[in-house]
View 1: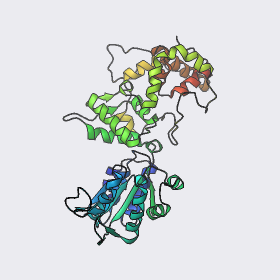
View 2: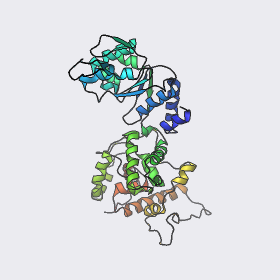
View 3: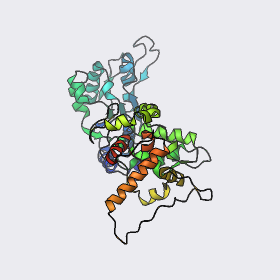
Length: 399
């Protein structure tokens, strides 16, 4: 598989993804055991696929096994196979996953879920490269490369007696960490566009995002990572095939934000109390979740050239932000008229920008009838950030 193909499997141009692809290329041509670490939904199986496809085993099988999906009583048979009559229901001999992956790659997903008694047998297979089918005393030599993955902290599992330390060190030859989506700066929009092409309905163009919508998805935490984003794009592609997705079309980010959204209809009744009780910046507001991206700022101030062209904010969104309606004779693609400033006599730029910010906040609150959560979405801000600005500038919230 060419390097460009690896980029198609693991999409993203962030520094974190470039480092990930580099590690895969380094280890793929060896026979080293790889332990892939990362949160659920980050694409650990794609990493295993990339390792296999780049290796000299690529013409042989890549055999996956989810250790959390196999009943304990059937685990040994699933992994090593069994002979006819080895147990009740064994009406024929069966080849296990190890043998199926001989000269290829065995991907053990959720390795932290493997039963303790099976960990001992797994350790022997890794050390000696020899297995025995259930019900047979015959040893079978195998040349199987192991790629294991987990979203658990195996060191913690070892401390709890749930995972064998010797097996951990046998697996942890070449660890690869797959970063969560919230730490992959700039990859969210690139992944969105990639997935939009995949989920485009027949004879329809892929969905695309307006500027505010792009800012919004870049701010979200994506706690379900790429899997959550994939479901998100597929849902939008079904609901709005071939359309341009505006801020108002975006569904809630997840159950945490859903809880906030469900209570937002009563925001105008409690805004004053919340704002007066707002803690200093950096502290938590009761009832909200302080998940903060390690790399993303509140909102990007610009897009790259290709993003700027494809993510031009609709005039309707600009008009909603400024509290205006579009004239009937204006093209929806035209931006609204913005006030000009005469600087020939000199201005205090900081004060002027603050006035513009206050005006935008007031217009957004008026447009959303005092609903702080909705106004924050309109402004491309976090709800807590808007509350801080309301308190800082003393903006009155409409009842």
